[in-house]
Length: 380
Image (cartoon, rainbow, N blue to C red):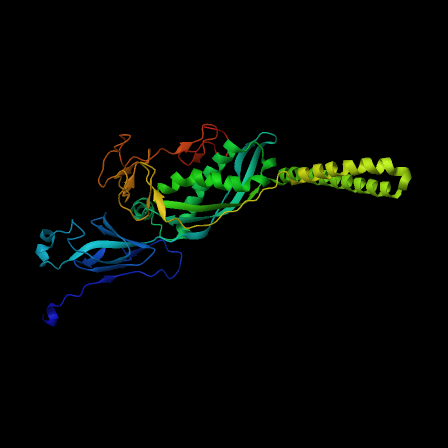
């Protein structure tokens, strides 16, 4: 082959130098010239998505792949004939980082309204961190990256924060009657809120691996009421301590009586085990040991049959349901096949978006599916 006829093929690959980049597009400025036969090198903890004519064509697992008719059916030889079978194609490749991104911040920008059973309407601030990972790379690109241009964790934090705060307000309204009981329920709230957010994150092709609640802060006057209640608990413990010291003093007094206090000493000896047993039993009530192990998931669950399947499976081995999701129904969450116009489960148009909720009391806009208004605390 002569030098002037030599066609050099690209080797497309990506290194995440920042550690915060969720998606990287090649070419970086949009669709460009990717030659037929180009090599794609996908590393561990990555997925490669090839887009042609604005649509996702194929997803690549870790390894080395060649862009040709064999693995991309739409790139037929007929399409390449006008360019002598080696023409450049207007396309792009997205590399998706599949690792777990940790220590992402969430919190209330403005206090959310909560109707307390004892204190009335209270405005709360809440803060914490969460971990996430991409579980459906094509769905993630189609729903977040392609439409909103979010490529890094910093860019999606603000969007997801709004969803978390809204679901936090709903979960608080359903499970907590008074914030006076909050300090002992942080762990339970974190677990329950994580489960509530699973469907919201799955709609974007994301998985919420962990969510932690660092603080729920009420106004100063409410905080003072909670502190006063805590002091009452300290007083109870002091009363128990005084009872124990009195019992010990009585025991010493009975021993000093000698023979004249024989009856008292004997009766106290019989009473002391019961008194100490009652004290230690009451002191141990309410103690809990909570332990959790942070594990990176290696599998997911089929939304149709609920079977455990590998994360990189394209179809469920039990029911055959498609796992490589290109888009989902905005109403029922059904996985849609490419170019679907209607949902096969609920019959709604595939491109129809859920309506944004407006509070009937104050008119403030809330996230779709909200149960309580974040502004006035009213229930829908």
